[in-house]
Every structure is written in C-alpha cells, then in structure tokens.
Amino acid sequence: MRDRKPRKLYWGSCRLNGTLNISGKQSVKIFEKYGYVIDHQTGSHQILWHPEKNTLYILNHRELAPGLLRSLIRQAEMTVDEFLGLK
Image (cartoon, rainbow, N blue to C red):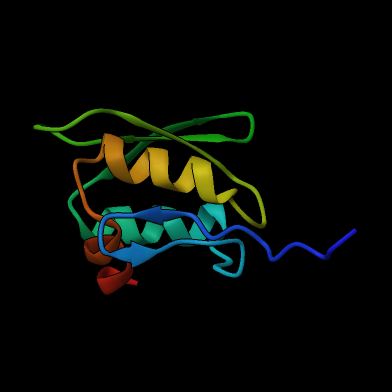
C-alpha cells in the first residue's frame, strides 16, 4: 500500500488544515475583535453574542477541529482570511 498524503481542507482562498492550532480561548478573542461579546458560559461552552449576526457556541478546548472552526467562521459570516487576519 502507498502512504497517503494528509488531506488539506480548503475553504475560500485560504487553506485550513490540521496544522492550524487554535484553542477555544484564542478563537473567542478573535471573534471579540470582530464585534462579538461573551454572553455567558455553560459548562465548557462559551456563548458569544453579536447584535446583527448569529449567536456562536464555542467549546473551551485546547484545540478546535478544523471543521468546527470553519463552521464557526461561516456562522459568523466571515471568511477564513478575515478570521486569520484578526489573529
């Protein structure tokens, strides 16, 4: 059997793969720069509120999975490039 290369996940013009290590805490800080406010926390979920956009539920984990992170970025009506630019 051949060794397979790890798949790279593309969304928009930016590559978002497993090498991008962003924690829940870091993502909350980035979304706060975009105008979100921490509404409250329930267990390990932080709930972020924005007056004009969707409410976000972010896990407070060491590393967020790339698919989950892409989903949160999409819900916030951002692009991956915008999100990484605020990092």
